[in-house]
Each structure stands twice: as structure tokens, then as C-alpha cells.
Image (cartoon, rainbow, N blue to C red; front, side):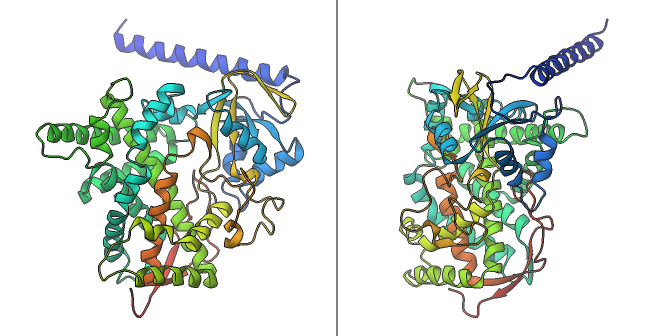
Length: 483
């Protein structure tokens, strides 16, 4: 028997055994349900309720998937099945607090198999002490001291982007243009990738990668995951080459140890003196490029949408930003202290994050059996928190459908009711990075333009993050005198 035929038969046998395992597992869960589990429905075998969840992301009210089940089953926790996994969805501030405060005790971070397969050696596949060590190494380049150094570079890059892609244009498609901006900025700050051709090549692959990163992990031609796998391999190939070139430049003292995140990861060791492997460096760069630009693109796009719809909010943001601009010398770049003055503008961003969260939730895994709200959560079960369980709840946000930026003044929302970046030890790594990135862009764009939506009722489905179906085209109106 030829080796290729043997490999083919082995693959078929493996897939058949896996399919049989999941069929038996799902039938057992449905025919003989554990009476101590939270109430809910596991849906169809294998598929579960994934199709309903994905469809709800294309509806005007994506939060209804969660809210309907909270009303039907239990407002604290319910069971479902998503992406081939039995799952308990924890709801409300109490559910958020429970998951965030029990990291490494009762739960660990978990991501769907599609994410784990695509980001093999990255932080998403590491838990416990190893995760703490790896995160500490990465966060050194994303802590407040690093961000203070980044602000001026962000400002310069933003001005260049606006001159090239916005000024002199009557119309702009916001989403793809902002996506290019956030990706270029992340490439520049994390790995000093500035060649437009190289950035464009990576951006194209990232677009394909994003469509299949959270999907059924079916690696067959024609599926989203198959395309995402191919794109991830191309991205990793490029990043591996960049990392090797940088290591050579560092050895020859051509590059600086403090140049960017890539140099830091190549030269740093963890507390035990271990260097990251090349695969770990490449996969974590892929993770950070993914995490730092797609969600930010979605947020900036939605901010621009709401500012077009709410002229009084736009005027208050403009007034705040012009006051900051007037305090600067001609040509002086923004500093960290200027970001701290953008309080109203950040409240506007917060309200956009509440009304249109960039993610629909994140996942954990039970590492022991435990009880919550009177129900048993078995070890190995997957757990989920979601902004949808609180952000449109009038009990936490009066007039929840209205845009009210003042909600975040004073003590702000109730604890754990507003968690756009998660919480606890595994809070989103990019949450601190996102703030100056969004505000620097906002400062530069509102100083130069007003804008009108060309498709006022354009749909913004989740795929997997909010993305306008037509790219959010706007008509630009330059101010007569730009600061």
C-alpha cells in the first residue's frame, strides 16, 4: 500500500472516529440530560444552536439570542451548544463577576477549536502560570509607559493616513479605510512593518483570516475555516521571515532592542530565563495584530456612524478636541496628557461600545465541577460571558436604547454591568492600547471634517464583529479652517 493511500485512509478513519464520538456525546447529552445542569436547549446534534446564534448577528437586535433565553430559561445562567461545544452562558453582573474573579481557580480561558488551531503557540492556548509568564512578557510593550511613547507616533501616523486617504475626497467608505489605518498602525508599532506592499499583502490575508477565525473548524476546501487556515499560514510565513531578519539585525546591532514589540519578544526571557520560540513569537504577533486592529476598526466605524446621526454629540466632541488643539504649539504632536483630557470623547466611545459591542462575548472552561445559582457546572464544560446580558437592560441602563454619553460620569454604571473588554486576569490585552488609538484618530478626524451618511439605514451585522454591509460610505464636509 502506498504511503499516500495509507495517509488518506488514516485521515478518513480518524475523521470517522471523531464524528462517531461527537454523535454519541451529543445524543447522550440530549437523550439523558443531567437534571442538575442549567435549563436551556442544546439544539441539534453537532450543530447545536450555532445557526441561530450566527443568524442573530445579522439581525437588528443581535442581543436577542441571549435575552430571549434569559427570559425563557433563567436570567442568571442557561445552557446551549455553540460551535460543537456544550456551553453555559453566564448572565448579568453576577455572572460576569463570577467568571472574571475565578480565573485559574474554577475556570480557565478557552477559545473555540478554530481559534486554537489558527493561533497554535500563542497566549490563547496557554493557561495557568505559563499564561501569566507569557502575558507579562507581551504586556511590557503594551503597558502605560509604552503607550505614553506610542501616542506621538500614533498622532503622526494618523495625520499621514488622513492626508493620504481622506483629504481631497468627497466620499469615503469608512470601514475599509479605517481598517487599513488600524492595521498599518499595528504593523508599524508592533513590528516596524512600513512597506506599503508588504502591509497590503498582510492586510488581504488578515481579511480572509478574520472571516473564519471563529467558525466550525472544518478544514475542507470551500469552508471559511479552510480559507482562514491558508491565510494564517501565509501570514505566519511572512512574520517568520520578518522575525528572522530582525534577529539578524539585532545581532549586527543594526536594529534597536527597544524598537518595538518584535525586538522585545526576541530578546526577552521569562522569569525562568526561557526565551520564546520562533513559533511562539510569530503566533503571538499574529494574535496581537488580530486583536489590536479588527475590534478597533469596528469601534471607530461605529463612532463615526453615531457622530453623523447625533450632531449635538459631534459638536461637543469637536469642542473638546479643538480646546486640546489650541493648547498645542504649531506642529506639536499629541501627548499622553492630552489623551487624559478627552473625557467626553471617551464617554462617547463607551456609549458606542455599549450600544454596539465589538465582540459578542468570550469563553472560559470549567477546570473543576462547581455549583452556580443552584446548578452544577461539570468539569470540561465551556462557559461564556456576553455584553448582551446587561448592556441593553434598562435595569442597569435607563432608556437603554438612547445614546447618553453622560452615563459614565461620576461612579458610572453598576460594577460588572459594563465590561466591553472583559475583566479579571484575562482582560483583553488590547484594552489600554485601544483607548489612545481611537482617541488620536477621533481628534484628527473631527478637527478636519463633518460627514453625512450616504446610506442612513445601512445594516451593520456581526461577521464576526460589527461591519457595515456597504462599508459605511460618507460624504465629507471639510471645516473651513482645520486646526
